[in-house]
Amino acid sequence: MKRYAKVIVLATSALLGLTAFAQKTGQGGSQYPTYTGSLPVQENLSAQQYQALAKVSMQDAIKAAQSALGSTATPTKVKLGVENGYLVWEVVLAGQEVKVDAGNGKVLHQEAQGNAEENDGENDGESNEDNG
Picture 1: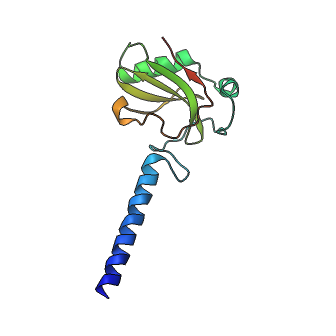
Picture 2: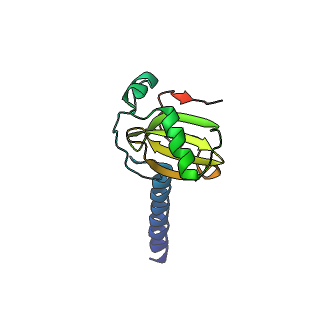
Picture 3: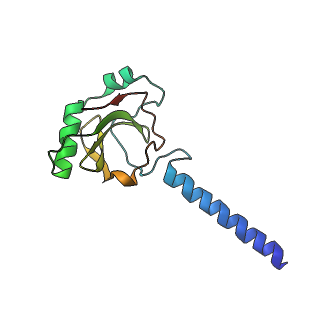
């Protein structure tokens, strides 16, 4: 009976671990971290379609990110893509990754670039906009 209980405990622990991993890495329907944007979009559109849907320009997204960080640094990466089902600008500057809502320019999230996964599951429709 003890052996059976150990198997159940191990199986339960493994399942909980996989669930936590899936939530953190964006598997199972949402990405980490979760936030809500203003422009819900499909993840299989072209870069041109994303550009047409964006109400905030790349330059305005950069300004929003710079303002949020209190920095005038030049971005090393600017990308328009889909995260959590919403259209967002990803702006990397001063060692920080800033997510800017492509519909209203609001900063949705920011974190040190080393904490962000290189490709955390977002679908950007090959819309990389490298600035510089």
